[in-house]
Structures are given as C-alpha cells and as structure tokens.
Amino acid sequence: MKKFFYLKTCDTCKRILSELDLPADIEQQNVKDKPISEDDLETLYQLTGSYESLFNRRSKLYREKGLHEQQLSETDYRNYILEHYTFLKRPILVINDQIFAGNSKKTVAAAKEALQ
Image 1: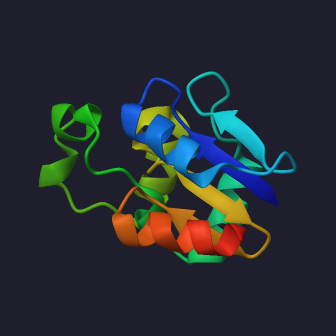
Image 2 (image 1 turned 120 degrees about the vertical axis):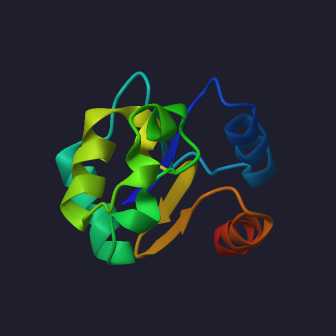
C-alpha cells in the first residue's frame, strides 16, 4: 500500500503534504470526503500493532464525548476511528510496510527520508 491519509481542511496536513512532495504513485485520501475503510484500517493496524497509536486524542469530539475520562480498549479505538474521521490521527503516510502517523517533527522527518 502506498497511501497518504489526511484532512484537506487541516493547515498542518496541508503544510506536511507540501513538505513531503509526494510521488504520483502515492494515493492521497481526504478522510472527510472518503472515510477510512475497515480494510485500510486493518492494514494500518497490522503495521502499528495498535489502534490506539492511530487514534487522535486532540479531536474536539474526544473531549465532547467524555472519552478522556474513560478507559478505552483497542476495540473502542477501532470503532471510534471508523465512526468519525476526526478520530484518525493524521496525517498518515504508508509506504509498503512503513507507516508514519502524526505530525511530530520526528515523524515528518522520517517520512521525508523514506521518500528519498
């Protein structure tokens, strides 16, 4: 799989997208227009070994739903990610068997290196 999951209205995602200068063979998927499929999420899970690592704790809905006060299981993380695009950590770049999830400087730098 060669895919970039992002939110086109997110300034951080747009900045990282321009920084990465993705090759044409990497599919770009705006998760608001086309939510992540169960199959794609399963692929991401296989690469990370954890739905929690793919979960966005900065989402407004995370606090609004009171999830920060609950003990969530891996199944909960999976279901919330599938329920609403905002729960997917972003951006996520997948290059074959490598995954880069999130917007930390370290993650973006590693993604840039993998693309070269």
